[in-house]
Length: 196
Image (tube, rainbow, N blue to C red; front, side, top):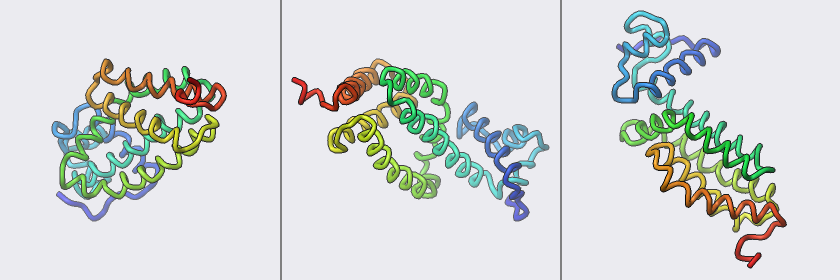
């Protein structure tokens, strides 16, 4: 039931995206119907088409918002807390627990070929920003990018996997490895290899 008269009011659309994203995160990609999305928007059946041309558009827009929010609350918050490595990792794991449904939704979307193709530009831009974030970590920790970058990516992939699969026992050894490296860097700018 595509609609060419979609509401483009920024604030209303942002609220609609937030409500639909919440619905997808709570119910899952495959279980969420157009009717569920309309209900989340407090509209009658089919009301979601006031905000999205199709359900597929709603999925993509919500997945893009999920990627943005995950980046904001995981990576950017970690950079803000980097002065205290223990606090940073505790906060990171707490936020990962709270946002796991969002990461699971994003992973579901990216596993569907028709959605994956549409998400590629978003994911590509995110990957490009990761290099910048790794540079910020290196600068804050007073270590070289070559040293920090592998541990930064260990954190990104491990936290992502943990959020999707919930395997804390598998994630913790990798998280602790990165945590120890970052602590060593922050305590004089030496990696664990140099301090031995």
